[in-house]
Length: 144
Image 1 (cartoon, rainbow, N blue to C red):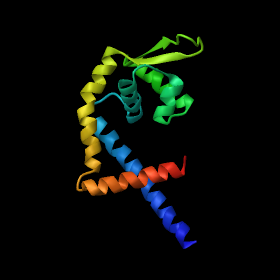
Image 2: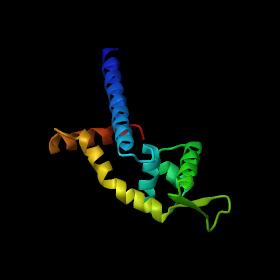
Image 3: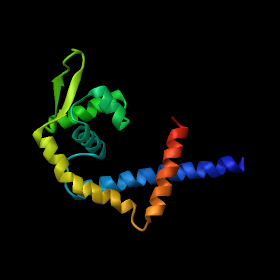
C-alpha cells in the first residue's frame, strides 16, 4: 500500500505541475493582451506546423474531444484566424486552415510562447531535461 501511495503522490505532483504550467501561460497571455486562449493557441500552432487538416485529425493531434474542438474552431473562425473549407472527398467533413491573420498571429506570438515555455526550465541542466524527457516518454508509453 505504501508503494501505491508514493506513486499517487507523484501522479498528483505531475498533474499539479501541468496545471501550474497552464496557469502561468494563461496569466502571461492575459498580461500580453492576447485574445486567444492556451487551447486556441494549440490549435493555431498545430495548423501552422501541419498545414490544412480535417477536424478529426486536429482533435487527435491536440488531445481534444470532438465537441471541444468544434467550439474552439467556431471561436477561431469568429476571430477570422482560421477557415473551414469543404473536404474534397467527404461532403460531411471540412478542412481547417489558417487565414493570413491566423498565420500572422502565430508568428507574432511564437517568440513569447517560447519564453513562457522556457520559464519552466529555468535552473535545470541539460541532463535534468534529458532525464525528465526520458521519464515522461516512459510514462506515456506505459499508458499507450
